[in-house]
Length: 383
Image (cartoon, rainbow, N blue to C red):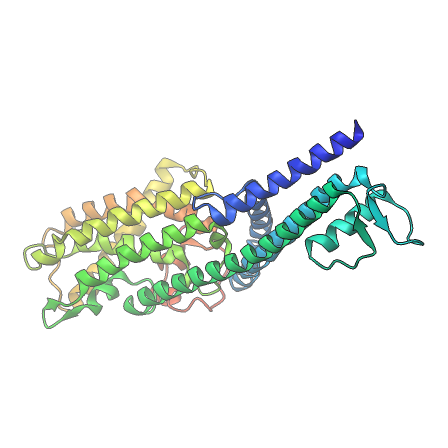
């Protein structure tokens, strides 16, 4: 009975690891396997709570360590579970069905763990060898499992780092076009030359493709969520803010009669729709819960902050000689509707990833948003 129970427990452990490897590495979906998901969320949750007690710059440096540590930690967990799983299968047959070198201390469980470990890593010292045919076959299977796990892990590491490199490249492109910060007005002005817009529609089309590609990277490799960049302008929350804000500003702040091909271009609406979809998918995949809010107080503060941003953007555009919406009141109402649609979700997403709202959006200080290396006090509110 004990032999059957030990074998069954070992087989279940191996199947559990196999399923997690399949779900995490091979299957393209928004959630990793249970082992990986528990490890990632647990470690990130603890690190995030501790990091938010630190100053901003230190917090970002602490959280920056988590992602690179999670990947080898997951591989180590897989190896430990596989060693224990196969050891449970060997245990009832040790030492009866094995050749054990004379003089070795006799401990069935330690010998089973030892033989399982050297077999999984294909070290094979030869001091313990299987004698029974069944145990030989299990040893062969374990050696193949170890080789497969190592190969998949290396491939996974390479794929994840390529996706991270792509994300940084996309973020840098936005950063340089948005006046090296979170200035969407600057992003639009960047494409305005001699009274006309050049390349803006192409930039928006590229942005739509880029954020959709980034979503797929996060869906295929959920661990990317936990690679926290020290430079805020390289973060996904900043990229999403710039895309969402660009769509809102173009539709609400520009004069549609002066720039009909820009304001009414399908790429503007497509960018907004795509960015909101990407944000919803990311929030859902991370299981981020809705934020509790005081409707009266929060609504007033948000409206005041949005209006300040709206007017600052209008001034930025006018100073560059860009024709703005002649009906400022209607433009403000449209801008507010856009911000109300996505800001709460983006705020929760940014906070979950360890960023303060004002450093992502520059709502408090656009100059600070262009220089995230500056150390500032923590803030729990959106300023």
